[in-house]
Length: 436
Ligand SMILES: Cc1cc2nc3c(=O)[nH]c(=O)nc-3n(C[C@H](O)[C@H](O)[C@H](O)COP(=O)(O)OP(=O)(O)OC[C@H]3O[C@@H](n4cnc5c(N)ncnc54)[C@H](O)[C@@H]3O)c2cc1C
Image (cartoon, rainbow, N blue to C red):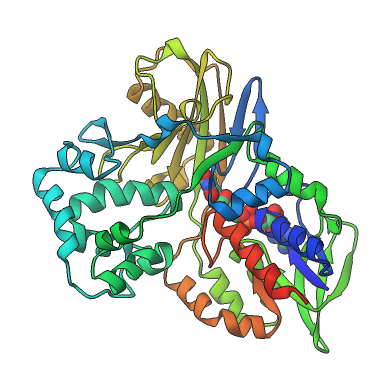
């Protein structure tokens, strides 16, 4: 039997796939509810995502959604959401979305635009230990790194591109350089496959509920605390509140954050526990703000706006939920989701909830020229947010095979990719591996 620890999107997807293919499993979740980072709240007519807001779905994910019978509930992003804004020199400017707007637009200086096109002829070899910032600034120029890469990385990883490794975060960059000598040339020869940005009518929680309803062999409010070798099998020590019990299994799958896997593996291997603990999960705060449309002088139309760290702002960016997806709040209202990350704004880590909320409100009301107070506001805090793809992640990836030889597997947003799509892919890949 396979014991899956954690019922977030990764653990649920794996459990569902194993059930479908007839592989025995049990899914163990410490909370009373499944979902992990994916948590949807509704308040009045608003759909509020505490964690992820959308899925950038590829073919496998779209097929999976169809298989679960959820296609009718999918809400695809509006065409306008292709527009993204970046705060530059005191105002929002549209980020170029293609070669023409890049060449003829004024987002980048003339010399920066020239640098971007010159990358096509770059012949510098690829260094596998490059950080994202070094790679992009060396090949495209500093302005591109500060105003395109940095805010993008803040938005996806809540991280600092000067720390994140290019090879782990976007392996396609190194692949393009190795194959074609240039990142740009690689993208022209092999354009990225089409992906669909989507959510569901009732938010991302729909996916979690559908999976949880289908997965039969599961236990909630059951925290796994320890694992011990037991004659070719594993003995898990589980705590369900009342008493501790043990559970025998053949394989263990960690479908939980690395820092929560660390105490489980510690009694078996201090080295692995240290590696797991070495992955940093910096803080992310978000705040949902709902206003009447006529309170805003500026009507956001696009996916949202990103705030590069080089600009003197507190927040990392704002998702314009109402213009991205239909039905996120009442027709006469606007829903904004504001994000603050510890990596961009270190002071947020020591602020109280009230201080952080006041700083967010002050900045947003100024940026969007808002008259009056929000209809309502709801804030959320992930003290440990998104795992950072730095050197420790390389160590774990390099040793994954040894772990798997002990019948211990990782199926989560580390080390195989951060997005929900990555998690769904990894779960499918593991299920295939476990097929008898
Ligand atoms: C603020 C934020 C915004 C994001 N936005 C996006 C986005 O828009 N799009 C996107 O694709 N991705 C986004 N992500 C990333 C994405 O949400 C996550 O990578 C993904 O949801 C991780 O799922 P998981 O199942 O691997 O882990 P988790 O969701 O962390 O699930 C792990 C589960 O394990 C349980 N658990 C922990 N310890 C134990 C234990 N000892 N015993 C049993 N169970 C245990 C936990 O309770 C939890 O339910 C975002 C993440 C954050 C934090």
